Image (cartoon, rainbow, N blue to C red; front, side, top):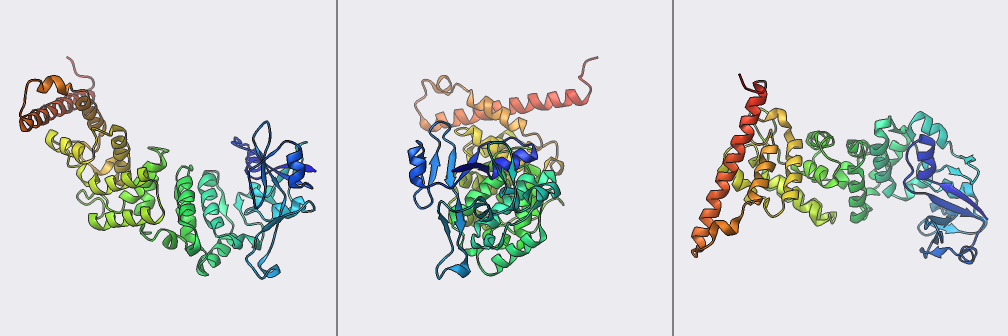
Amino acid sequence: MKIYMVGGAVRDTLLGRPVKERDFVVVGATPQDMLARGFHQVGRDFPVFLHPDTKEEYALARGERRRVELDRDPGTFTQPDVTLEQDLERRDLTVNAIAMDADGEVIDPYGGRLDLDNKLLRHVSGAFSDDPVRILRVARFAARYGEMGFRVARETMALMARMVKRGDADALVPERVWQELARALVEPRPCRFFEVLRGCGAWSRLFPEIPDDGRAITALEQVVPLSWSSEIRFAAIMGSLNPVTTGEVGHPGDGASAIRDVESLCTRLRAPRRYHELALLVVKYCQRVPEAASAEAILALFEATDAMRRPDRFRQFLLSCRAICGDHSISRQTAFGRDSLLTAALERVNRMDLLSLVTGIQDPDRIKDIIQQRRIEVIHQEATRITGEDMEAENGGGGS
């Protein structure tokens, strides 16, 4: 029995990046051998075992069955005589097909180290085309390592394009498409995910609701410096379908069409509810943010977005909206360019003592009117305070 560290842990070690988790492959062993050593089996078809102390994953070496070898779909198999090279050959990219033994010696039969040096994401073998999920994985790795200058090898991009053309991408399970998208959104260069999918023709197949007209990429580029949240980044992309129009800046948006597209994509890919809700909020109400220059308009925005009950989501909403068209396109006299006004006003409204305000009043309509009016007054006070501070800062601190 021989044990090797494999995959991302080796790749990131060689790149000098932090290793988040380690995976191991075991050569020359059977499931019974692993169980006898105290490992806990968690896989059935292709056994994976957890180390009794570290709980790290140890998989038996697997070989790859090819289409030409079988009358049925290709797959993998485990046998004690499967070699390390056979196991590494079935992996997606050469940079993920490197192993390291317990002494730190690197085993690299497919040129992964050279590809790391050349910053190339290149497939190991033709077996790559047996799994269309690998198209998404390559795009996600491009998003992760794009800031380091990594690019997809020309021959790998051509292979992915052939896979898309023959319909492989159409067979992807919706939940897996969403999983890879959500993971790509929190990478340092998420735009590269979409650019790679565009390059092989998969964008329009996987995300037909998101037009490849530059707006989604622009919104994503603008939201990346604002937040690492995948929810906020996704909402910015979907909000770009119905962008804010401010004079000559922006594009005319069709709100109803954008709402249908958000509903379609989120339903089809089974997106979690929090993503779905935030994206809809941005599409429906982002247009109203630059118009919220009065206390009445700000309160109406709070009510429409349920901001008083869900202030954290409202802050996510504001960040997504800011990314859609950016501060430069909005007048300083509106609340959008300085969303601190909106968040500060919301905090003041939520700190109001409503009980003491309406104690002794029996008429429900009057209670509602009193609360409404007091909220408007509080928002106006906060807006006046922030505006005054801004003017003082612009005048060099005021005073004489």
